[in-house]
Length: 306
Ligand code: SAM
Image (tube, rainbow, N blue to C red; front, side, top):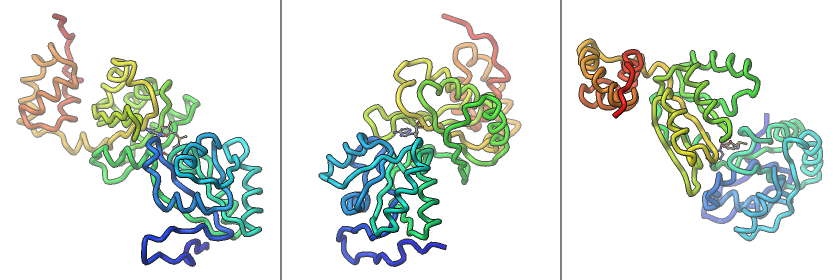
């Protein structure tokens, strides 16, 4: 068992930290906004003997912004196996190494796990320098009702593996946190709706911490259409947070509210999309929106055009 960090004393003041010899630091960096770096991350990046970076050009921008001149070497998905040995040799020689990825926390859908494993196996301390991660940033603003969330990261690229995983995830009483690339986001939203049901609440967290940051909440069944409605919404980086399935069941309307909604919905659905109709019916009757949305989907007639 490693006791990494145990020897590093907590400073009584806000004095800068210095990287300790023979230690691997796993350093979180900003998702976009360069001011989201922590003071301790800057201390370690500035005092380590070397920085192992996923893309040296991207890391160079962060370092230049903060006047850090530490030497940088490349450690990415394609050379991690070979570079891990190199890093362990440096640690053994008493060098301190800071590991960073392009954005957020290394080893979270990024390279890093292999070199961490190798360093620990070699008996070297591995110390986290926590900070930004797209998953935690998205969950923090999602307002999910589930007490737990499962970090899915990127879904498998193979269709069958994706379907199997989603079928299993659908059974969990937890929110799901999915990473997705812009060119796949619409298709993935469709697949999520199919596998998890259209009524589960979704939060799309797009371009977090950047100029066009967007946080939008809607029933999963409406999401692909929402993205398609504006080409801007399909650009950038995405985290999809899907609330747990049980929320809809737990919040099922009582008999009165359901009957009341049933009275309102046919007229509303002639003018509005199921999501909007559900929002209005929920506001009027006080019934939970997710449950009313499911009712709306079942009751949906053909919509009349003006
Ligand atoms: N290690 C990173 C972390 O801690 O979040 C994740 C790296 S992974 C290669 C990149 C994915 O993270 C993107 O495709 C997107 O799903 C998510 N992501 C990264 N930055 C983001 C941002 N600013 N806004 C939304 N999602 C982001």
